[in-house]
Image 1 (spheres, rainbow, N blue to C red):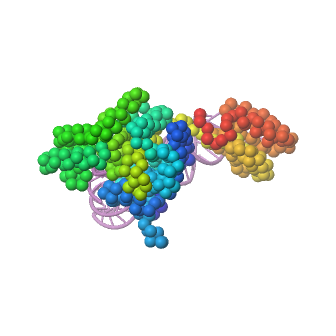
Image 2: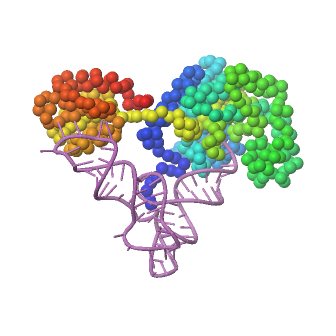
Image 3: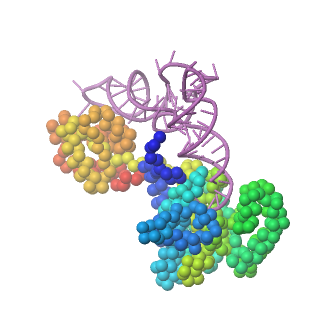
Length: 432
RNA sequence: GUGGGCGUAGCUCAGUUGGUUAGAGCGCCAGGUUGUGGCCCUGGAGGUCGAGGGUUCAAAUCCCUCCGUUCACCCCA
């Protein structure tokens, strides 16, 4: 079979599904704007160096998952694998830090990573996310976590778990890393093979290994919470207190370490346990060193990224997507080729006024056209047939109850516009 | 990159120990009403059985290779 298909790990959103995505995106934007975030649209590709510096040279994303190309000017460009680096770049480039002490931005769009696809993972996938820049207070951490949680709740989701942890600042993390490394080195032979590699490269990642043997060993290893400096401890305590004050339940996950290098202090995930192996709906945390690392001033930041495919799957699982229709308000049915011209004119005039109007093929039978109108979900059909046309009339049929009446051709468009308006808003997207 | 499952009509799937022209439901088209949708009835179109090779008198069925897909590992949204 030499059919050309969508590339591995990508997919087409067909009209019915796209309608559900539009609904979801509208809700997402509404909540993000309510929390004071403005949308930023950055390029889908960036200089490769941005991601190398921002995400970290030794992360899997940068080492083996980026779609990198060389353009005709010899520049190395990369399709963005995540959103934060681009937002930070734009923040610095446009000197937003000089305009206000705090900047709140959100983005939504496609990301690209060359990984093997599986449940909840794609090569082109979609994320929305927020970045709150310029605020070092734990209030910012709490706001961002609560925003994510509220957003999911406003979409109707339940049974979500917030997993929360801190990874400290560069100073206390260094101390912890040393303690952890020596503790793990003592039991190195018992660790799984991948963990023995992790021990060398990034010992923190041993903590969230899925192997039961490793989990058993990790249980006896020191916790980061015993190595936090006073400031980091205080920061984390204040974040948890704020969450408790507004009644947001969370689970302390001392083993939660996120994969991107830029995180400091607070890290969190919100998961849906029914999603399979890739069960995080969103993940994020604080990144106080990132702006400086990317060439800007020392501005703190906190944010999260949320996977839209995973959100969509969860909405489907929990049956929270309403019935949506894009059916036309009016379906014009000409009987015979002669009257097709009339039908076309009526349809065009009404479309220009903002009504959604479809029309049938005049060479087909009335029965066939009505069937099509019904399947399309039309509210009304306008039958233009020879008999009534001879008398200067047309027939308007209400599909829901089958009733119909004749209307004079003069003033027809205005009359139909009046009737059809009662049916609903003059936009194709209707929520039932 | 590694490992397991699965590829039969537009969709969801049957297909016996290898054995006639590969089936069903849904969907699609048409008719049952010389101009009336949904329900019902009748008929029709639609398949190189993922691709290539092999075994056999005979392969959708058994074997090999490749491709696709899916789940998991790694990692992450």
